[in-house]
Image 1 (cartoon, rainbow, N blue to C red):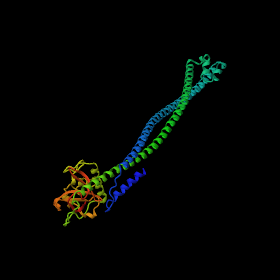
Image 2 (tube, rainbow, N blue to C red):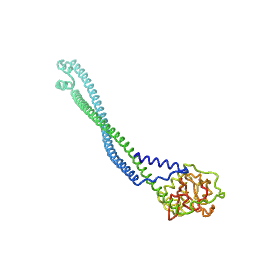
Image 3 (cartoon, helix red, strand yellow):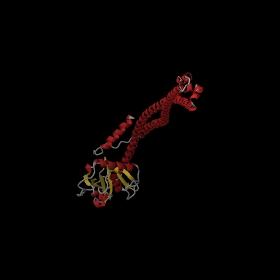
Image 4 (tube, rainbow, N blue to C red):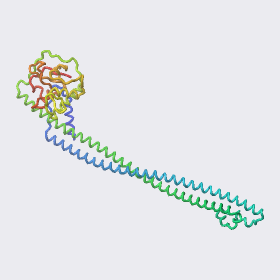
Length: 400
């Protein structure tokens, strides 16, 4: 992997120094180097895919645990509501029992007064005494034979008090039992909720760990892919250079440049080197994509020579009214003229039939190291070529 990073770094360094007057030719990686880079990329992809599968499984488990935790939370909330109801019922039953006890106590006092009255009227104290010592309505009911002497109304009252007290005591016991059972259920559900929440939290940590590994593997995969792509592009450009150099050698007079007879352009420029580099990168991308030449077009799928120039600088951020679609001759007056010795990547080059502005017929984008990006012709398409591979180079470049 270090070997390919070193190759990638060397390429980046070479590309940033294209303004130097004399650099070595574009390196031409071997097919074996490209194959090795492909294998590294494939291995990284395999590892990333395997990790992605683990991450997907972990996420699925997390979703399942989240559902269980949510269900446990719902049961816990329900149990808390039921416990609140049971507590309220126990309180109500206790209150009812207290009210009944108070009523029975009042009944004792009433019976005491009745007994006293009966004695005063000539009754026997021995008959009344059990009533005075009665412990609640049950004892009183056991003395109904005696109570009959006190009147049916009082007997019925005591029977009602006895029944109410029995009901109240039963209700309180049931409510207290329900409260205990509900408290136990609430505690149990709370424990289950804690287990579910803890499992969910642990799984979330596992997912985060796996995601971090996946992110690292994806970065490594992208790095390996970039190395492989860079090597392929280097080889492609080197082959283009060789092809164009051979063509230039076989065509006499290609290195002749028209004399400068005082041509004038703009006095200012509108771009930074960053923008010019973006324009070069755009033109390079179109050439490497092998897009065809079609006269009068400016992309995105086909270009002619001035259309490629227009689209490249538009991609670099120039828009109307600072930038417009012109023909090759007009672009020569629309840019600042610079010496061919002072060319930087992104400068425009012009080709003329007779060495005059009016006979300029072709325009290209300087790539550095004596090379250019151009939309050449219908038969040749878009090319990376030597700046002297076309006859009639004008003695200046145009800086946008």
